[in-house]
Length: 377
Image (tube, rainbow, N blue to C red; front, side, top):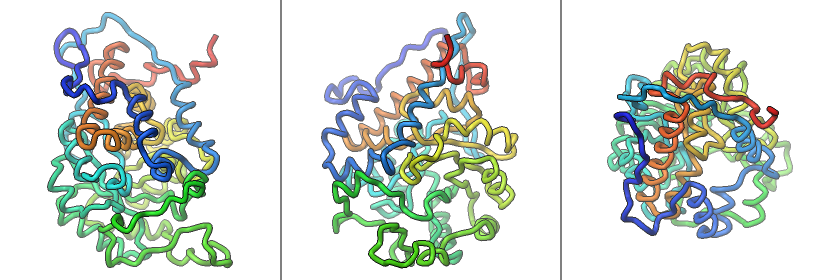
């Protein structure tokens, strides 16, 4: 936001084939994807209760316009873990991107870099982490799961550090796969040509709650599931700062920081794990209050518009990760689609800032939003 007036401009006005809005991207992706791929990337767990909550709770938050403010020399810059970022919109980690576009994670990294958006690469990337990082200057964070034991997890972390990643994101909210009705109905399976190549050679736990094995689920997997002591050991020995992803309560947030986490991501895994879990945006304020600025707090799950980013920042998030909008951009137009989606999100954030009288991110305070606005008369 530079100067006295802000007019959003699409950076690819000549690409007339691109959708014009973020909902249009979602609609086109849902139409174009094979049914089983749409089930995997666009659906949630169970009957979709939490997925609906993610959107409903964002939509329930109103915005408070503020007029005639001096917006000259505004910007959306911030610094996280020593890195200055152009804006607070990050690309969330998601797996098997080659199912969406032949460019896969490399295309996403290129699109993110074009829009100066920090990208978090999934450990379940369908392309080697070194190749993706080389193609994307802003692909700086690497996401991983617990690899059955500390040694295996540290091996993956060390490889990420050697590849040049700056931060590790440890996802802790999926010790087993969620029960995903739509995936079961469509028979989603990975083709032989797509696999999590970065996990080759590492023992992988089986997290399938619907296995044919008739023994009690926990008896089959409990011995490889991480506990708080494991998180502490990993944070102590990790070559990079560890951000813990999948936090939904103040208690878990506090314990994660005490265990050595350098930050937390408030997330319900995009509603893909536990149907009935609360929306991330609804629990964000209490977690921010509990941590009281001790570490950065990020959030994801349900973010679809730039105004959603604004709402999350107003309620205390330092930055926001977006997943499904990027999924749709990649599915519709590869790297160009990713870039366009991220530009639309950033434009919408800046428009929202301008219309609420916020010149910088520091101006986006809780009084800029109205919780439960739909209940007001």
